[in-house]
Image (tube, rainbow, N blue to C red; front, side):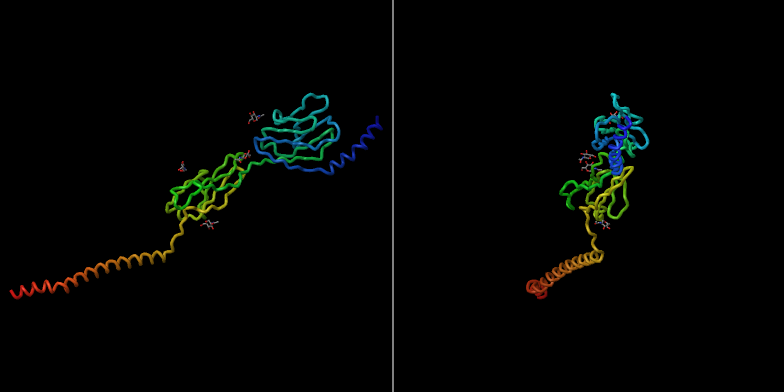
Length: 264
Ligand SMILES: *[C@@H]1O[C@H](CO)[C@@H](O)[C@H](O)[C@H]1NC(C)=O
Ligand SMILES: *[C@@H]1O[C@H](CO)[C@@H](O)[C@H](O)[C@H]1NC(C)=O
Ligand SMILES: *[C@@H]1O[C@H](CO)[C@@H](O)[C@H](O)[C@H]1NC(C)=O
Ligand SMILES: *[C@@H]1O[C@H](CO)[C@@H](O)[C@H](O)[C@H]1NC(C)=O
């Protein structure tokens, strides 16, 4: 019996040491409320005992002869152990499930360790414009801060106009060609949740209009005045010309009359 055990140890020990030497930390990610599956590498030989731990706490335990695995603490009702492969499934994952999962098969700690991390960050949003043909000629357009936030709620949205401050707002904003909007060069949106924050690329404002330099505006005013003065002068010149012509042409007619009046 003792020689048998010694022989077994001699055969198995190098394998155990080898496994330990190859100890790997596998990162597993999950989202809150989702599920987590830890699949150990195929164990050598038949599995007679399984022990899963989360940090220092027991998760699931099973030994030959037992009909059902035993689950512990918060994992009761959420964990499922496959006794032929050692695979562990956990549903309804919570923040508290983050940590290190370790596995012990047939009383030997397996090389694999599983570091579970919660992932519930917001994605980098994109600004979508509606209608697609939104242009400076449109009546109004809707900008939407878009991204897949299925696992990231609650999310809040903020918008920034040009170099202005972030303002918390709706996911969509309506813009139209008003004076205030015309001076905005671009828009940026941001998604925020309790653990993360992401902002979109800068999106050009379809209604942006470059302000005319003031010198040009004065030139325009000057040219307008000049035009008005020119037109008024032209009208006066015409009136004067007509009047002079009448004066010059009418002496024959009017002159005759005058002469007649004078002669009479
Ligand atoms: C797991 O989540 C489902 C749906 O979200 C719920 O119906 C079920 O009661 C939850 N189970 C546990 C053990 O919390
Ligand atoms: C959003 O992400 C979830 C997973 O987080 C995925 O199931 C779903 O298909 C995604 N939806 C879209 C529209 O991409
Ligand atoms: C966005 O607008 C701001 C303010 O006018 C400007 O400083 C910045 O360069 C613009 N960014 C891009 C990418 O056009
Ligand atoms: C934006 O415009 C759309 C369509 O014109 C309208 O349905 C929506 O309620 C508006 N949203 C806001 C925030 O004004």
